[in-house]
Amino acid sequence: MSQACIDQFKAQLAGGGVRPTMFQVELTFPEGTMSEAEDLTVSKGIFLIKAASLPPSNVGTIEVPFRGRKLKVSGDRTFDPWEITVVNDVNFSLRTVFEKWSEIIQNHRCANGAARLDRYFATALVRQLDRDGKKLRSYQMNGVWPSNIAEIGLDFDSTDTIEEYGVTFNVQWWTAAPGDKDPGVNGPPGGIGSPLVIDS
Image (tube, rainbow, N blue to C red):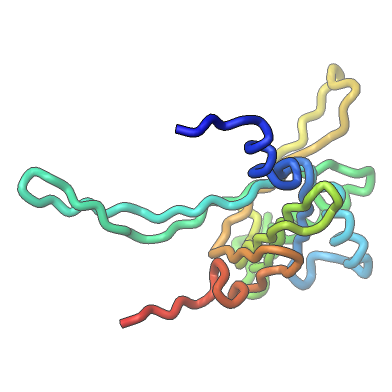
């Protein structure tokens, strides 16, 4: 058995590894959630969304019993909710948009809400960056909408801090692409989310 050394490890860890602080989130918002400052709000999200995650990949399991044993075969794919943490600015820029978005889904006072899915479904991009700020890999969450906009705690004892809050989105499906290209709704050819060609 060969002896592994630090130089061999360094050769495998090209670029020094990926840093969890190097990322960018870009949200699109449904029509009617923003004012004329749409581009400003989108760009603010790139800076004010301070925490997010790359999505998990989940496939369920079906256990088929046979003579005291169980054959495990694939079940259905599911997509977990996706969460972000947002830094609150003095204009409440993103929170105002999220609250309007939630209001479109269902009114606060009445039981009215959007009658079409495209009125409140949107997309979200998470880009993993290298230390030079170049894109390594991008994930696009499709059909997202906010199911929860978390509270903002207020407290006289909270010093040396800036307000932040969480937002939880439901996700229909996600796609992924390596390098400097964004995956889009259907994913890149041969990438995650693109239609599969199954040989018969």
